[in-house]
Image 1 (cartoon, rainbow, N blue to C red):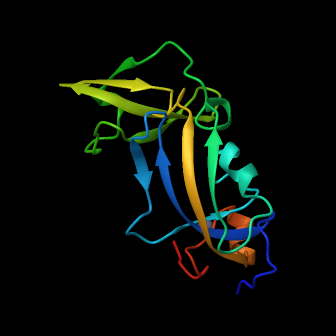
Image 2: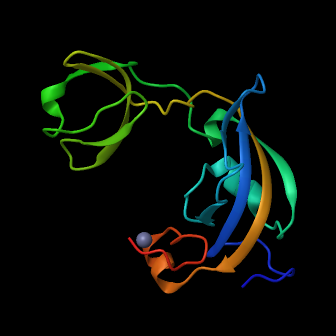
Length: 167
Ligand code: ZN
């Protein structure tokens, strides 16, 4: 369990509450009223610009982190939304706007794509995260820091707040 001398460092599971707002101050996402979020530090579970500003923080620390697009969800790039026929998706797949799926590339790598619009059998997909190009403003409070267990280190992500969540 965490004590007050523990700081956020690689291979620690960090539990935190956050509110994410955009440049206009509109709330995009928040853990308010829900379980705090857990991530494995140093494993790229959260956007790099937030992860780097977590380093060295202690339980109880509250801070604001401003993250530029290149350290967040990236700059907007590529050709923009592209049409894909519904038949390209697995039969019976639930498709809705905003969902992310991994497309298998010819070279075997996976590329994340986001559904931006559905019109009949034509699904418009974009390679940009919905928050690409946005400056992000995080309000963070560190709720807990603990050592990651062996399974978590192997998987590269935490297994829930206490490390016992199986999947
Ligand atoms: Zn796992």
